[in-house]
Image 1 (cartoon, rainbow, N blue to C red):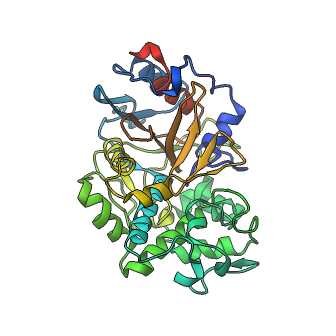
Image 2 (tube, one colour):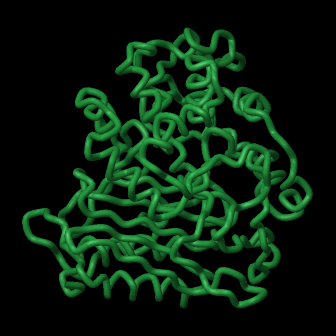
Image 3 (cartoon, one colour):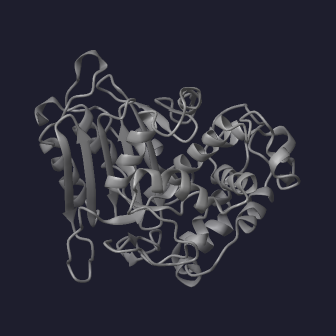
Length: 394
């Protein structure tokens, strides 16, 4: 699930937008001149911000930064609350909605190959799938799926679904259930659209499920196979995989934790590591590492995965009216930092895991980090400020 704004109880789905709008953490400790990101060669400020997030209650953080000074890795806090084992610098974790960037990249490659059109309707590729309660796939384009302007209801915003699969006893009873994309789409299309296609941006996981289904329809293969063939294998992303219906995290990895009973037992923390991967198929199921994600986004933004025209399409953004300092492209976002720079990024949350990859437009300066607890995202912006804005970290 993406860290998007909404009326949900945990930070993993309230997210970056809501945190930034409701906290005073966007004031950055220093300003870089001329809108240029600072090269944080020793990353002391970044480490201090990570330490602060752990001190505030996140079990552990794994991170990797890449810049002109080389590669910096960090592992802070614990990876297992029961044994006290530390987080690992090479941990693998569920990346949530960073999956969207992989899917968007495949679709843009297909566009370059003349296999799809961004402005062709969803109904053309998935006839009769988007229907009922005013939902109409003949009025929504592939581009509108990828930049989240379709207006389709987010299936995760359906209260019964959310409570069944992400909260309390519902999660504990259903964490091993296998779900199909069609089951989640049925939930989405039981609701009317939120707005007319193209009217505005609003993140919906429903869009990303449909995008993955289009990849399958065009290729004739599982979407996972296309991601592996087009991205994972060419880039040598050895820590990146799709779980299918497995509930396991491949090693090395840490445990994932959530406050499933936040409203009634706010101090209770549950181990939620095991989760059937099908529940996030296509819009949040990928498992990766900080190093692999940095390698992926560096290659993507550096033009190694897309021709110039498709890279331009990827970076054509629409403003997020709920979070005006951020705009959404085709699987990537921008964030206007208080120090005058604009970062590109994507964030994602799955029960027990929060991940963010941020990078300059050319991919030359990157930071990816993961929390193995999902209930407090307030430390995310301070970490970004420290890495990209703080001049004292030289």
